[in-house]
Image 1 (cartoon, rainbow, N blue to C red):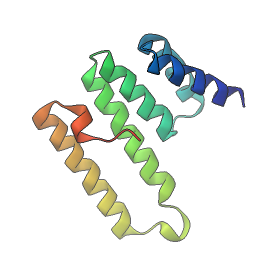
Image 2 (cartoon, rainbow, N blue to C red):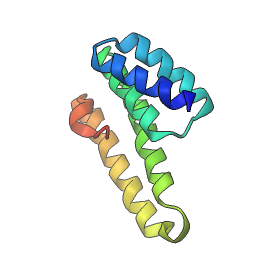
Image 3 (cartoon, rainbow, N blue to C red):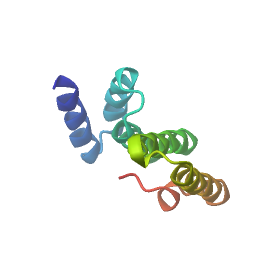
Image 4 (cartoon, one colour):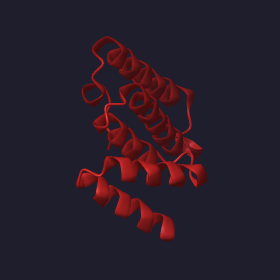
Length: 109
């Protein structure tokens, strides 16, 4: 429960423009939850607002990939859906490489 509390406090700080402080919390939480897509997305948003776009893009890719992996389990785990998701991710990466605009390429939430 304390990790959720830390995450929510960091998100509040982030919404109040305290991205550097929020980023420290997201990084700490990611050490114990490395595949959490919400942490990666929040980290990406903070990095983008700090002007660290390459790092933000990497974190956003991790977020999308983690979410894809979390959703494609059990009966939903099939090659067609994985391929579709991975192709969408690759297309997003190409869009970022061309435009340099992270927000227009990937959706955080």
